[in-house]
Image 1 (cartoon, rainbow, N blue to C red):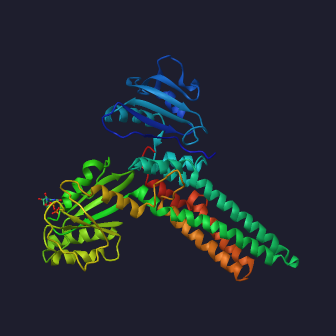
Image 2: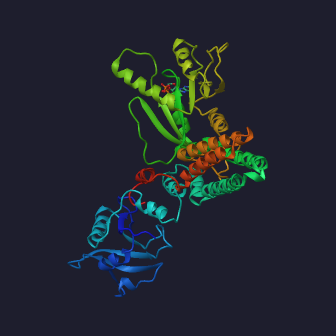
Length: 456
Ligand code: GDP
């Protein structure tokens, strides 16, 4: 195992709470803790047994003044989160208690952990691979139970296993090719080529199955983004409220709530949904309004789905028609709102794609809308026990690996030399390795961990 400095950080959220946990990892964890931790039993913490919890006080190293009353857990490496010696101090919550204990730990010789450094060590020490490490952060950020379940399955190593198997199969093919190329006089090239091509056919199917899960996977991880559009007073805000009434997702950060754009998170049967109520997208000369309009248009361009709202109690007008052009060629659902009122709208001759009659006011049709949204993006029921690719980086690596494997297969099928196919297979092997982190450049690995929070 590599040697690292001993690091420490607060692993729980800072704020008023019952308990906070300070995590320490590295060869000197125990020794550092022993300097500031006085056990109630008067035993020396240096003699503590692994995987036990001790009770006592954290004291100032110099004055021996009591700082806080704590419980201390000791995990001996490699059977710990980082695979190093880990100590976790559970102290009182709240900023003052937590930071005082952390400062005592720093004084005793630990240095502040960088964002994601604990998980990075678990990766560098070989306890988990990169895709598992990335899943740890997805668990923390999971927006619904379903997203959580899929992240948990990835952190358990399901994706890694499949990728490792694919890499091994490629290695076997490469070995096979090498033998053939080394003994050209045996005239094996033709039969070997056929066999390799056949194996590649099966593997390509396997990889494309994985890639196919990524549309659903991305939605589970990042949420489906929906933009509600329509002219003023058709019922956009009422619709958003009707959806939020039962399905508001519990999220801590709702960014981007501005005067002209409202964003909310919904949870529809486990699918996290980010829904944007775009105020105006009409043409305007007013500079301030123009900025709002541009921002709304940006949101519409980014959205996975557009929900276009019409007011059925008023005749269709030019403003409605101007907005209709935004749904051109996009995944969209048109809502004919206010069906509880007398109908005054004639939609004949208009191509509006899927339409649903709703009343945002009394909730009529809202369930139908949710069902259609689900059907549009998830085929059948959502079963996250199956392997799902949720991370865009993984998807891109899979696409590149697929490309190289197909290139290898066509080279073989066209009777081009096996040597050339081997180069492509090698590249595919490397791309797969980027997912597990085996072949990813160090700076890219660093970048991934720097997006983590401190203390994880
Ligand atoms: P927005 O400007 O598109 O966001 O529209 P609002 O949601 O503010 O709705 C405009 C007006 O239409 C409000 O007075 C709503 O109460 C009313 N409204 C919205 N949906 C319905 C509906 O389904 N039926 C009826 N009768 N009124 C509705």
